[in-house]
Length: 389
Ligand code: FAD
Image (cartoon, rainbow, N blue to C red):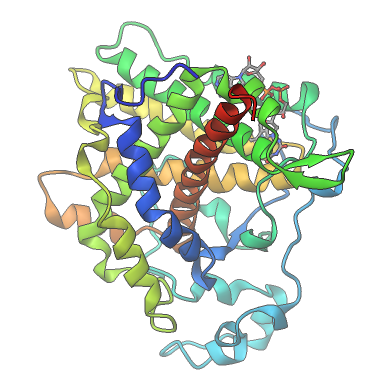
């Protein structure tokens, strides 16, 4: 790959590939342990929604690798998450038997929920439908039990999804500042695509040996031979890490089930304190007179990308697609919708992040972090091969 690792990633990121590798090396261990904690590993989502854009009856992924293991055995959850224990947690509130029968895992929405009482949605600042993540019809999944890896999903079905996602990057003509916004949108999508390609190459099933492991040729064909794709993954890392850097001063009110496990917040702080603000300059993206219209357009188009996830035919791919597009949507909200001149409003937006947005945000960062680690491992494998090792 012909990337100069001492170069900055693009005009909006005043950081080099090497610097990102270095940051990633410092936080990787903490991030892995964070996404394995009870708060961050259980995600709720509507996994089986009708595709809103076209009839997706064709194309099913029937491989075992495409499936998602949903949590149905409540006894497997941590003891302090059991409904009877939680029944005693809420002041002035109880979960009636009737309710708990009707909706088995509803209590999990309330557990360590941030701002449970004021779930007023402000539609004009959302980059995804946050209602999509909880409520009736949603399922509970343990993300760590359903790793993102090769599933065999492909062919015309997945191509159709990718081309409709790229098709969203079609902004109205003649807007000032359009090109940076358009470029950022494309990079976000391509970086997500490259990150998925990296995971499926890194955790690939060798059908001859039956073993899972990295496949260098596949990685090169999907990602490694395209420096722009690698660069877009680093761009996404910069975007998400800047969003995390930005919320650091406002995390005091947020709960991560840290009353049960105080190490969670300490781990988060360890990670965030390694991040750098210069990694991404969000203020450049929508500069210019018509910026607010352009930003709205950007937001609506990104929301469409999150909804296209309902059309993905492979359950496992759809689940990780939803987690990651929600993580990006949350990052974009933090980067573009905080009023810089008003501390209270910044605190207010952060206070209103739901637990599922937070889970998605940190898991998306972990996915990118894993991709960066894998890119570096693939580079080593490539060099060994070149040297004839
Ligand atoms: P595709 O990856 O389908 O790409 C289509 C075309 O897009 C390529 O021909 C190329 O021209 C262009 N392209 C490819 N990569 C990029 C990029 N980074 N930037 C710009 N353009 C690009 N498969 C799994 O095995 N595991 C998963 O977890 C998984 N998750 C998925 C999640 C989603 C939301 C989607 C839509 C697909 C997922 N897939 C997953 C399928 C996977 O992404 C590929 O679509 C599939 O492996 C077929 O790959 P392909 O080589 O035919 O090209």
